[in-house]
Length: 105
Image 1 (cartoon, helix red, strand yellow):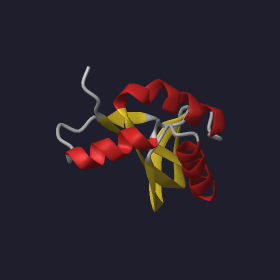
Image 2 (cartoon, helix red, strand yellow; image 1 turned 135 degrees about the horizontal axis):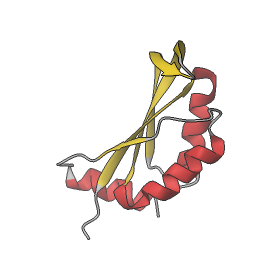
Image 3 (cartoon, one colour; image 1 turned 90 degrees about the horizontal axis):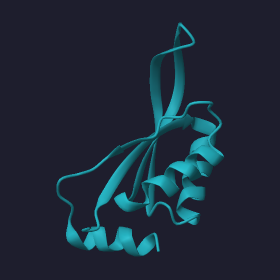
Image 4 (tube, helix red, strand yellow; image 1 turned 30 degrees about the vertical axis):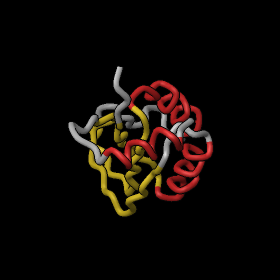
């Protein structure tokens, strides 16, 4: 299997975003996490439409490590049902992929 990159989208309360990002990098399940503040999420939860101000985490990690990353998010995330969505890019700058892989060893 060829090593590849995944970008995992995780939303969370803005006041918890940087701490969650740091913990994922410290645990080596992510090489880099961008925190995008000011996200407004509108969604249905428990039969009601909800609106929350959140932060979006763009988590860069090896695709092969998704399960470890998912478990790390679940262990640290305050929501009952956190968003954890992996996107696998078709192409990645090879030196950047090498850095991602080395950062998560």
